[in-house]
Amino acid sequence: MTVTATSVDESDQLKPRIASGTRAAWARRLVRLLPAAAAALSGLLLYVSFPPRTLWWLALPAFAGFGWVLRGRGWKAGLGLGYLFGLGFLLPLLVWTGVEVGPGPWLALVAIEAIFIALVGAGVAVVSKLPGWPVWAAAVWIAGEAARARAPFHGFPWGKVAFGQADGAFLPLAAVGGTPVLGFAVVLCGFGLYEVVRVAVSWRRTGTVRRAAAAVGLLSVAVPAVGAVAARPLVSDRAEDGSVTVAVIQGNVPRAGLEFNAQRRAVLDYHARETERLAAEVKAGKAARPDFVLWPENSSDIDPFANPDARTVIDTAAKAIGVPISVGGVVERDGKLYNEQILWDPAKGPTDTYDKRQIQPFGEYLPFRSLIGAINSNWTSMQRQDFTRGTKPGVFTMDGAKVGLVTCYEAAFDWAVRSEVTDGAQMISVPSNNATFDRSEMTYQQLAMSRVRAVEHSRTVAVPVTSGVSAFIMPDGRITQRTGMFVADSLVQKVPLRSSLTPATRLGVLPEIALVLVAAGGLGWAVGAGLRGRRAGDV
Image (cartoon, rainbow, N blue to C red; front, top):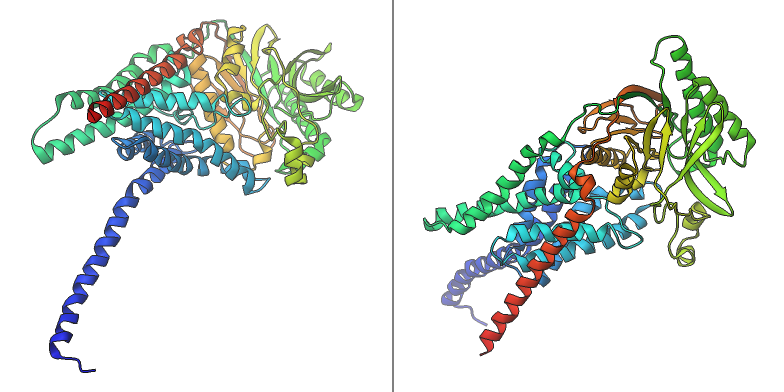
């Protein structure tokens, strides 16, 4: 075969064209992948806005990015992009759930919870074509949070947008309408920020401004900000019913991890020892005498009603300090297991109890126990017996002060905290046990929840934790004292008692219902408009 000069020249000319075509194909693929990458990165940005970091404001560009990838798209694209946003947010946020049990439960939890955010993405895409879309879209997000807080297995509200705003400028809105209103304001502002940028870019390109779109964007940013400023008078740490001096005991655990449950007596001894050490300091004049003492959840995993040795240890500690103690115990009655707070009087012994109502699935009880046991018997052996739910709010009267009990996981649920305040609590205690999760971000995420609850209900919140971080939180959300992690320590502080009810406490679930109805209205409008448009096109 003879190769002519002409054919060689044509081959050389084709090479740049092929290379150019290949680059163009790759560029098209990258452009198609850009929304997916932006959705995942926006979710990651939302995670970074959460504690222990104080970058609360990153939630705004996170939702601006989410709005950018969803606006004008169909519901199917919104479903996929929403799922990617959910993975980017929840994978790092909930990594602590696999600290002791491995990545399986963590990945399964994230995969399920991200479905809710995927549905939100589909909903936001649908309403994004409506006038005033940021309002409808923000309401759809809150509707998604409301669903996550209730299902499956009685819900998992961890990761509500409001819980990332403990250091934020929008925090006073918690006192107006609780976590739904606070979260709505943040999401609305984020979507509004995108709308402002979109209008500005359009103006630079075309030289014209759509006034309605510009007004929607500006109002979506301005109204939440102005609302937060207007709500500031609702935030106060002034004592209304006098003050009490409270001691929080952090006894520590022998070592981190689930294994500490096998060392129940050591944990009890540690908390008794720290209480007796504080009693000695009070006697020596080195510490203020508390009016009552708060121990954490699981500070006595040995049932003091059934075990005389545990009862003696607690009784000795109560007599040493000379004031009532709220003890976190594990108690069995009539063959049922309860995660219980016990009010222990130094003279009378146990006088009142509160049984945890919102118990943790896969932590305090196992749904589908037989199926899970067939998959991995280690999981069922770690939780041999399911805890039973309590049925009544818990408010202890301690030296005349009414203290509402919200045990650990319950702090994530709006109803569980509000019920204690409406039942007369003048301050709140959140006894917790975070030793299972080692030094992960879980402790700081939960502490931020308690800060939001303090502002939401205008109550002092004390947080006694077995291994830290224990803290005092004022009704304005400020942390005034805190411990380190995995150290034995105690905190003593004079704190204000309050009895007035914020609008959020009075309104309860009504703001959330209103926002869910707004979301439903927006979705109904958008779907109806789409159907009418199709019919008109078919004519």
